[in-house]
Each structure stands twice: as structure tokens, then as C-alpha cells.
Length: 528
Image 1 (cartoon, rainbow, N blue to C red):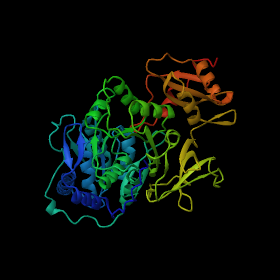
Image 2: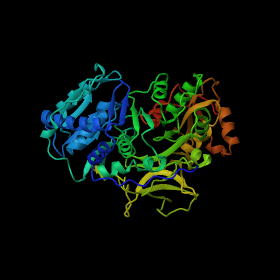
Image 3: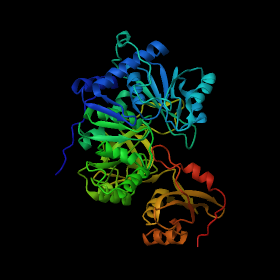
Image 4: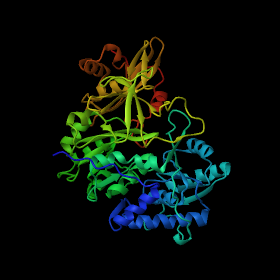
């Protein structure tokens, strides 16, 4: 049975208006659960946001247009603070918790926040000490929230009398400053409006038919732009989100089962943990599961097949976007299994998508080119100097990703313009080689990197995590496997490194810069 797409939402002018709208429609419906056994309804969420807005205004002098940075774990505090700042009309700068002194110092220098909100400690790191040290340099106020020492009751946020607040902002503007992860250079500030952030949730809203019976556990940092995109989607659809501040491979999959998950995200390490938990269970762990949701990093067809067979549901539904242009494509429950396995879905309604060659000329369906995007979720510019040629004269955002738009309109990502290994003057797609190596039964996870080579310029190195219960594959076995798949000899791995785990960002992207630094010494393994 085909699932009809939901109509594209008509968004109000501001995110706060969308919060108000949902709180009037279903005030008593559950909105959030979290891993501290706390809940909020949509009506309670609206009220808490307004009370915290009053607390921030009275105790810290936050006014419309003030810049407020925050670095909090995923939980009710983060989501209520987000809503409170939307009520005030402040410009908020969410920072992912994994970033440390160097990156946060660079962000503070760019943003110049009035206030910086942090947890005291999270996962063993003293965020309060870091914030205090940086405050001495940059002059912002610090609001420290108890986290590791919090008793789990109530919200660790200041509150005040909402009657003292000025009217909520009626017009949109630049309200968000997000930053790239800083893995390749100093983080760059990416500006968004409420409208562009709300539009980022459109694909999920339109394609998946979410409703009050759906429960979507989230363990990625909500300080990524996906946190606000998912909030906008939730405010339109009315489903439940379960917030998890950390992801423990043994414990969290079972907790997500206990809350009745109908969707699970969001990258390969998470999916592997769900599969392991299912294998250890005598019963079906996720009987209500509709699909797993992928975003932030490519998925493999093999992982999709395992999820569909072992966990149930549609498998892994892909989505694609970037901080400058969130959630541009989304897969559908009505897509064929072949399209779900090998693509990231079709462009979201309202989004125009093209692929172009190196000269900027459109390429036909089925041929590879750089992916360009235009639509309402496009960013509003950069904070400070902008990288050249990111936006074309006719308003398309250049993604830097290589892809193929199939005749059906589905997007298949094939690599990065900059994630190319240049061997003997020939370009090798790291993604193409990763997909080939990942299909070997002995490989549980893989990243392919280019390492310097005196003779050839670069050589392809496969950094592999061995699949559970398998023996370590040899380099010769991996080379033969890739050749059997049809790859030419010059494109197969020439070096193998085995690791326990790949370094990944909080959204699941492999930190290739770390791998290149680690393995830049001469190869320790022969190619034979």
C-alpha cells in the first residue's frame, strides 16, 4: 500500500509561533521523554520555555538580538533553552559537546556571545572550567548548569515570571549560528533564520507520515542543526522524541526498545549496536519499528539489508544534507528496496537539485557531477569571510559532494570533490573504494584515506574494523575482493591498517584527518 505524502507545511514567521501553535493543538500530548525519567507535554514545553526566557532576561539580561552560545548534552535542558531563546528572539549559537578549548575559543572569537551556557561536567570533561577560562579572554557571562551532580528532578535552568517578558518577536531574521566541526580547519560560522531551520524538517514531515503514536529516540547532539530541524518536524507532526545524552552500545539500544521506538537513528555504529542487541535478545526487540533513519554519513547496502532482515521495518531510510543546507533529500517508505539501499532519496518538496561538471554545466541523469541545491532551507551566509564560490550567481549552494541523480530523481552520493585519492595522476573515489571494502564479510567498518607516496603521489589505505566474530582479513584478500567486484587494479587498496574503532564525530562522520595523521608514517604492511 502506497503512503500518500503529507502536504508541505505552511510555516509561521518564527519558530516560537510554531511552538505556540502546537501547544494550543495538543497541550496534553507527550512531547519529550529523556534518560533521566523526565517527561514534558507540548503544553508544558511551551510554559517551561517562557519561564526560562524570563529567567534569562532577568538574571542575565538577555534581550532580542543578543548572541547566546550554549554547549549542553542532549536532554530537556537543551531543548527548553533552545525554545526559551526562540521566545526572546536571541541569536543562538549551539556548540556540540565534543568540542574543546581550541575550537570553542575560535567560535567565541567569531560570535562574541553575551552569555555562554554550559553543563558543569559531561562525560568526564569540565566544561565549566573551560567556559570560565574563555570568559576571561572574551568577556562573556557564564551560566553553568548542574549535570553530573543533578538529581534528575526538575530542570536545571533559571526561571522567572513570564508576565514580565516583552512580546515575542513577530518577524524573522538571522537567529542561528552553527559551526562546522572544525576537523579540517578552524570552524566557520553558518547563519540560519527560523524559516530556514523550520524548512529543514520538511522532508521528514512530508515523506514519513509521523504522528502522535510515533516514538523517535535521539542520541545525537541536538546542538547540531538536526536538533532544531527535528524540533520543527515534531511541532508539525506531534510525535514523541526520547532524548538520550549518551549512547552506550550495550545499554542504550535496550532503553530505546523500552520506550517503544518506531524510528531509530542515525549512523552505522548505532545500527550495529541495535543489531547486536537484537541478536542477544530472545524476543523481537523493536516490534513497532518502522525504519532506521540515516543521516550525517553514508550508509552501506549491506547494513540496510541486515537491518531490514533482523530488526524489521523498511530498513535504513537515507537522508542527505549539510549544515549550510539541511535535509535536502529524504527516502520514502514507498521507495523500492533497491532505491532505499543505494540512494539517499529524492529532493524534498521545494528543493531544486542539480548535478554539474567541473565547468558548471548540467550533467544528465545517471551521470556523476557535483551536487547543487536551492531551496528554503539554504543558509543565510557565513559569519565573517565567506569561502569563495559556495553559492552560484543563480542561488544554488555548491555542496562539494559528488553524486548521481537517477532517472527517478533519487540521489546517489558517490564521493567528495576533496575526498579523492590522486594516484599517479588518476583520481580514485574514497567512497567507491569504501563501499567495495565494506562488502567483504570480514569488514565491520572501514574508512579509505590517501597517504603520501614518493612514487605515485598518494596510495589508498584501507583502515578497517574487523567484523564481530570474524578473522582479520589480509590485504591480499581485500585486494582480490575488490578486483572481483570489477574495480581496476589501480583502484584497490595498497595498504591495510586494522583498528578497534574508527574515530567519528558525534554524527557518525569518520574523522579522516585523525587517521591521516596517525598513519602518515611509511606503510607497515606489504601490498602482496
